Amino acid sequence: MAFLLWILAVILVVSGIVSLIRGQMLWGILLIVVGLLVGPGGVSLFT
Image (cartoon, rainbow, N blue to C red):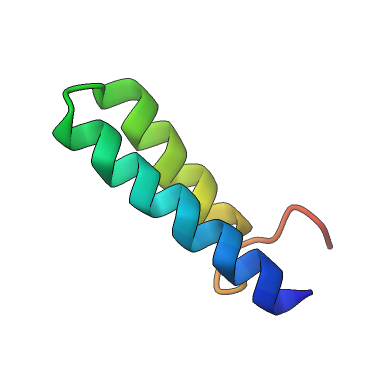
């Protein structure tokens, strides 16, 4: 389960960075924050 959360967190952070590059600041920041919260190093939403 931790591996799946790690993959999900990486996808969210990468898509957030891509959104920032494309000029969607609020959406990019939101995706990065959610990715950091979901990741196993952060506060997991599923535990």
